[in-house]
Length: 256
Image 1 (cartoon, rainbow, N blue to C red):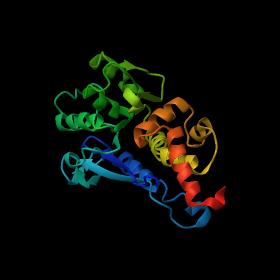
Image 2 (image 1 turned 30 degrees about the vertical axis):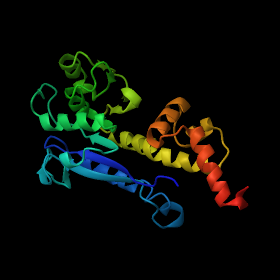
Image 3 (image 1 turned 90 degrees about the vertical axis):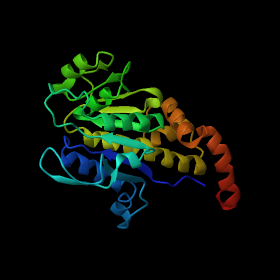
Image 4 (image 1 turned 180 degrees about the vertical axis):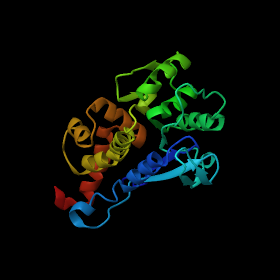
């Protein structure tokens, strides 16, 4: 009845990233759902996200802190991820990006056009700005890169005091600003994407108002939750409840 396909997450890797952020994101996404029941029951649960480390080419890649990362696949083979994560770029703020990441930028544009959420940590927002996807939008990045971002990308409104900015159509551009906010970014993405599956279960089995379901699934704005739910599921929360809640009751008459 419910879509149980894990959320696909592509973690983009280039030589200018650091291994701690790439592997930290990967491990946290991999734990979503799998590790939650272990705290109480001691047994793994259902894996809710499927992260994959992608790069221009599959195989070993030495990154900025000297660690060799293994990219599981070329990013060209992943045109339809649900989420793309861009780690920080370990580069001086004054160093230009023009022409340096042409293939990566083109892939980000394609993924966004195909409906993906594009999320960046720290200075990774510069790559998003380089793609043009932030033109006319608000953005944030690490404080040391805010001036450079403002100068290079005048069509972008840089919010220097905000640690998290969510922008673009359907709120599919997400940026975390600080050097260690990749963790908060990953937790936000888990709540946002896996929360839809949790909400489907609540709508099928309970009678809570949609606003209460949104809050329980981790969304403070019920309107945003409803729009995201419709995009992911193809039905509004109320329509989903009418269709599948009635079906579940019919299959399990002892419930009601």
